[in-house]
Image (tube, rainbow, N blue to C red; front, top):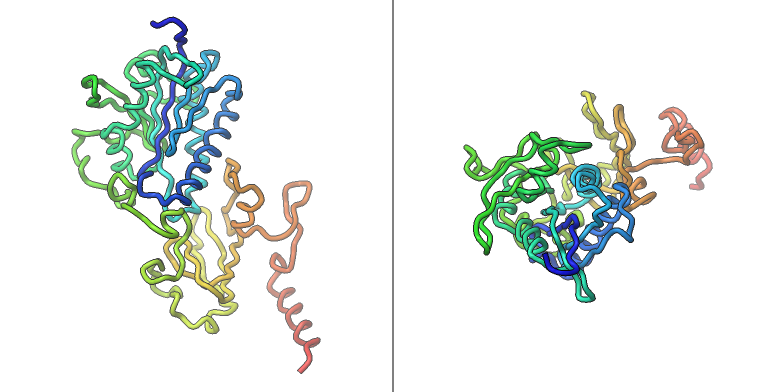
Amino acid sequence: MADGAVYKTLMSVDTRGSGSYLDGAKRRMRGRIYDLAHASFAAAGVAKSMLHLEDRGDGFIAAVDARIPPVRLLGTWLAEMHQRQRVGNEDLARRLGLRVGLHVGPVEHDEEGLSGHAMDLVCRLADSSVTRTVLEYSGRDLVLVVSDSLHHEVVRHGGRFVEPSAYRSARVALKEGPVTAWFHVPGEARPRVPDDEGFDTLPVDAPSGENGGGASTGARAEGRSPGREPGHTAPAPAGMPTSDTDHRALRAEAWPVDTGGGAHWDIKVEGGPSVVQDRATFQAPVHFGGGAGAAQEDWPTGGGARARGDRGAQGDATPDGGRRATGRDAPDSARRAGDDNDRTGESD
């Protein structure tokens, strides 16, 4: 080990399909990555003074102080990243996909940054074709790849949010030669890896190609819901309105919701520009009221109150966590009475 090199947990975070983002979209994408990472580091108890981080344009590399056990990054930090990313991706037309590499080894740190074979290894693992392929064929948005030594010393012993059986090994070809790496896809009991039967069959919801759906421009590349331009309106299921439907016919029309188990939304359509929700096109403004079983996400999002407003929460919060009723929260009979009073007071 060279003089000045210290053992640390090393990390590389890369974005899926970053080359196809437009400049403005890439800037916002980088902002999302740092929001996710910093919040997750804080939740895992990693102070800024314990972290050296360098930007890489479409991600970052980092060295975490040896006082932070690697199992905490494999467990709490990764769990936080996964949950926060999942919530954030719900509002994006193009989901943010991340490849994360972890390794423990000696690294040198000078005024120019981080260097050393261990740092090279973790970067190449995160950027390898096998890691890209595992993410693509998982149909999900986050993959973790760890070195064989980190798996042997830490992962296989388990820990908080670390399940050894959820890791799979595969051979990875690097510039220095083939190595064994271990893969984990949060949310999957066991990820699929090359040589598995049926691995070459993409899941229905998997992005197409390593760019996560290919080159995108405009709203899709920026992670915004597509507008009404030709080719950007999602197909509406039978019985649902389309962007060509007469807005007047849709005013104040309530669409039925599935009364089965789980969370659902009560959707009130009042006319206006179209918006897309769950592959259906509705006419805005659209008010989303929490139906039976609907609950707030466990993890806060960077949007704060704005994100909660996007969920359509109406009324003011009360000290006990509830909401004071507003006109939108009032029973239908009360709303109808109010509407009648409004009409009575209108001049001809």
